[in-house]
Image (tube, rainbow, N blue to C red):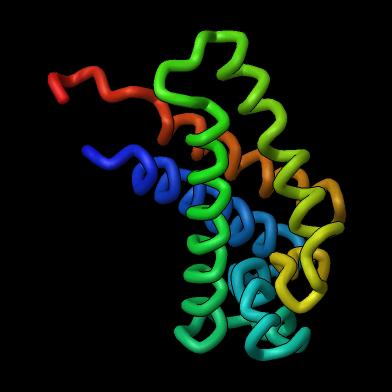
Length: 147
């Protein structure tokens, strides 16, 4: 992919939504609540109780997560700079998860949080943030094929 911001966003969004769905399946027996809860800004907290995957809840939840990941990918790219050294890349990547979690849950109005607290334990939420960071890190790796 030629556009690093979109690649970083795509990898991070797929990884975090995938982790949310898998953890949801393990904890609730259904894939739905893990992504549906992120639509709580539109549908209220009851979105987290919808067990099926559907466009109304899941589509909005996944799109919301992708939009939030775009924001974090942009900040991540800015913090990394054009050609970061190894130390800078490691430190920025290590900071990404905790910083995004703090901003999402301490500086953002409750209505606009990811909503994961409606379904997941703090440990599971940390795993979702970790998946996002891993996805974004792989998405930010420079392409080696002549581009």
